[in-house]
Amino acid sequence: DVGCGSGALSIVAVKRGALAATAIDVSEAAVAATRANAVLNEVADRVTASATQLGDIADEFDVVVANILAPTLIELAADLRRVTRRSGTLIISGVLADHHDHVLDALRPMVPVATDRCENWVAVELRYPPF
Image (cartoon, rainbow, N blue to C red):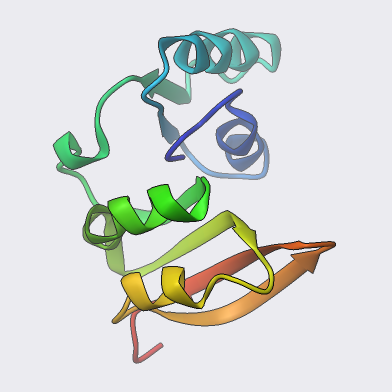
């Protein structure tokens, strides 16, 4: 969970069956909120939160989620691709529905396989071809 904020995505992931979740954010307040919310939701043993920079993450993950605005997604694109396992899925959100092609371009060679729209925002699921 890149840009974990309150940790909601990590918490939902483990509540829905993920064995563990790694949550990172540049804000120490977000890291603290994620840890506190993991305790409240009884998943603190499976959610790890830190202020580790994405560029310093060496692992690859089956699922990477990033609910971050477009400029930051573009800035982090190379690292988002790098930490997403070749057989994995990257889910981005926090991007405007009518203005996100430049984000998708930055994430190539990953390609969209599903897009969900809510009002003026989209969440896009991307994978490496072939799927």
